[in-house]
Length: 444
Ligand code: S3P
Image 1 (spheres, helix red, strand yellow):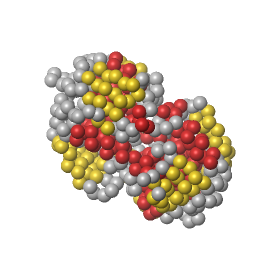
Image 2: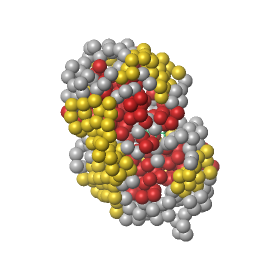
Image 3: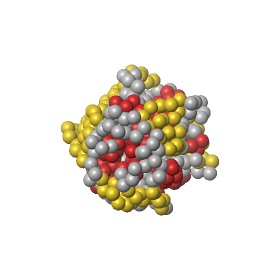
Image 4: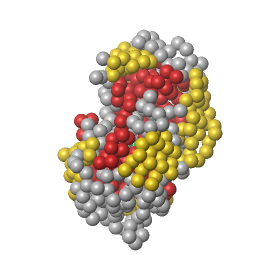
């Protein structure tokens, strides 16, 4: 059954104090690494979304015992019995990553170091995404990994891994993490060069578990393992609210007149806060308060209020630090005076879908003046959008971005194929409703 989301023009301000679900990147990593630890890990506020549930199921398929306390539909507490770095059991092929690129790429690094064969597969959408970016460096490390023309399914056979020094040509946290995680099983030191500040949750989590990963400039080094191999300490972690999910209500409140909202306990790791810089560059009224550190990650409460926005240009490191938020930022630019431009963002073309061309195509249906370039797009604002029928193309972040756009249209907006929103943000619609947003599910 395909789910559609109906949004009416928003005539009243958005108001309230909310929390959004846990961080997706951290939730994937926490399950993977806790299941390899020596002992029992406790993960609170874990994100039960489509992508991360696939990783949880895979950990269970690998023989890991996980006790689940379903605190709410958007936050689970997990108790994970780690089996040690070599304790996973051979699974029945294939392991199903569903739509999750992060799940597949990080697990490929870990599975390359196991003494049993495995197959990683996923949806048709995931089967279209480029995997050479991980199979090339993993093969250089000695992994036996084969793909279908650089695409999933990935078939992995046991082999002895060797550390390498690898220069990434794109700033990708998934590639960096796949190499570092394989490095846990490799002889010698493993080094990765990153051309920009890709998110560093893997490094932080490994450090918290007793693995002294170090970052010096653009190089990240996992040292040679001690005699007998690495032994990961269990995790005791509360997952911060996902800044990528917070971006949707943030942009909504920045563009709906007279709104003011606060989002509590949001992860503010520097490698993830590009969206705050992008909004501030447009003149958005944004304040961060109650800043603190928990589980090695920076957190804080964010308050945003409506203001008159002006155009801004985004490129370079800000793009890397806000890559997943560019689609929703594009919605803010439709309400900003002047032409806003994004460049250096070619990576958007290899996300769940080609987020440049699909975003441009769908926004044009709402009357947005958006022009594509090879590595970005430009939007002319400000304008009141038309309502209309648009499609998420089964991409959660595009679905939510289009829903936010629907708040500032003249007429009704119907987002087709919107069930995918639960891939990263269960409870998105209910959370927006709690702020007073005029949106509701329509089942067909
Ligand atoms: C992620 C890294 C980013 C990001 C994705 C999550 C991660 O992808 O877009 O949503 O958790 O490591 P890339 O590594 O491809 O840039």
